[in-house]
Image 1 (cartoon, one colour):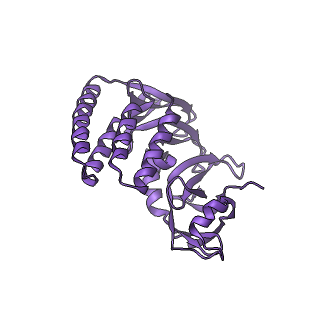
Image 2 (cartoon, rainbow, N blue to C red):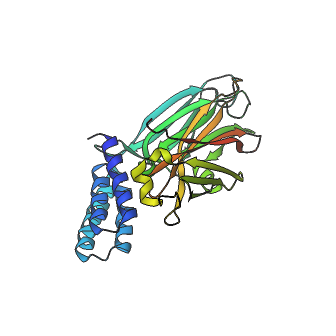
Image 3 (cartoon, rainbow, N blue to C red):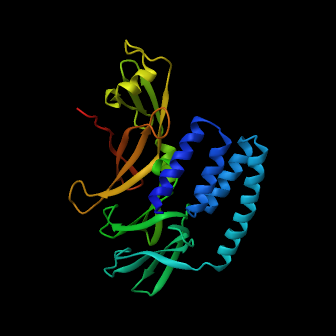
Length: 310
């Protein structure tokens, strides 16, 4: 089975656990993560299940699975050797010579999952290499992009890794050669901490999204969701039957775009808006980030919504 099947299945069981604490879904989630090669994630899910579930038969099965997984993880760590996942060439330090930029990682057997993802920069002029471990160093489809984000006429390094978790979240980093050193200038974890939102359903088939960092408010028209959806939560006069809060997911997309066509890239960040539950998508918050000499600051932000049938 391909990775999309496992991602969809994992997402489904995450959603079910948000709706109900049925112990069966804990086991199904763990089993799917194991089949997808997400052994560390499965171990984390087991720990959560042991805390939240009162089912003794489930706990016994999970403890048996945990023991087997720990043996497999330990064996793989001792035998697995890093391989090159992605490679690019570009002038990283601005000396006019193209350097080699690599992502190395440990391959999980029979799975597209990678662990111990590491950035390696080989300076072709000095013949020296620098290894930079990433804070979140495991996931799917680790990719590299080289381009000038800071305006210094040298290539900066953009790394994006799919987490494989619900919501389609990613890990992402940008590295730049500044004052003779390669420095991290963007971190998806820090972005998620800074860009917080509140999502609330309103009367007359609307929902509001408030960007706390930018102090901006967006109003979403929910009529495209259809009559069945709306009648579940609204009275006939368009008044909410009960208050409903949604949320905005962590970063799920980060794309280099040269909006001004001046050779310097901006970052286009995407965060999915969830309604009553995670699979209930309302749209996306899109934030354009631009380097200001110190950080990637917000240049503009908007919300994109899904269209409905005519």
